[in-house]
Length: 120
Image 1 (cartoon, one colour):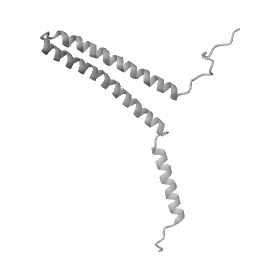
Image 2 (cartoon, rainbow, N blue to C red; image 1 turned 120 degrees about the vertical axis):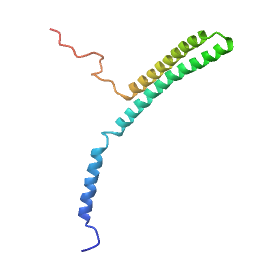
Image 3 (tube, helix red, strand yellow; image 1 turned 90 degrees about the vertical axis):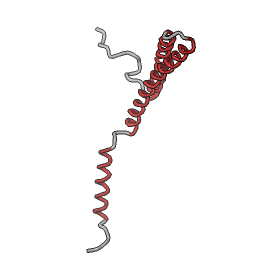
Image 4 (cartoon, one colour; image 1 turned 180 degrees about the vertical axis):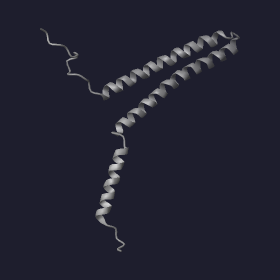
């Protein structure tokens, strides 16, 4: 037996490995990155809301302790923190919409009209 490998068998093995890797990879790397990006944006929006509420609670509680107005400032600043968190989330959603609109081409035939039946 010779110690040198058979070139044709190695080539066939490399081709089989390449086909197996191609079958396991996602259809495109862009799709995988897009789903990862969507998960990132979802977490970002959740964190924006939670941080807004948390800041409102902390600030309201601190001011209640300082002024002795418990629980009124806590309630007011919690609601203001919620409103601020929702406002920032809406801004993030607009940003995602603009980014998605720039990435995807417009659908349809370009005239802005849906499919209609011919006039009789």
